[in-house]
Length: 106
Image (tube, rainbow, N blue to C red):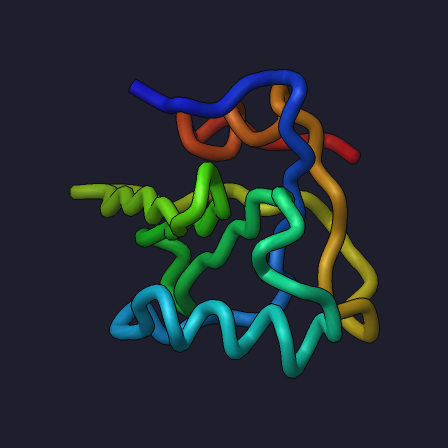
């Protein structure tokens, strides 16, 4: 069960991510590539090159939470985006659709 809600903000990192990265590695991507603090309360979404794994990084109450999902078959269907942009905002509804494997139209 997600501890996330419509009150949270969500940011999809638009480059394929190495899923071996954990808290510190993902925080480094947020700090270095997006140039923001990973502890700003935004939920950062990372997807691997094969699009069968997703990680969500979220700062909450003095520490980071990491959600991880691996699909046994199929891929996550990502919204269309400008490849020159590092990230894009998603709504809670779009996040749920993404995690459930339903195409997001943006």
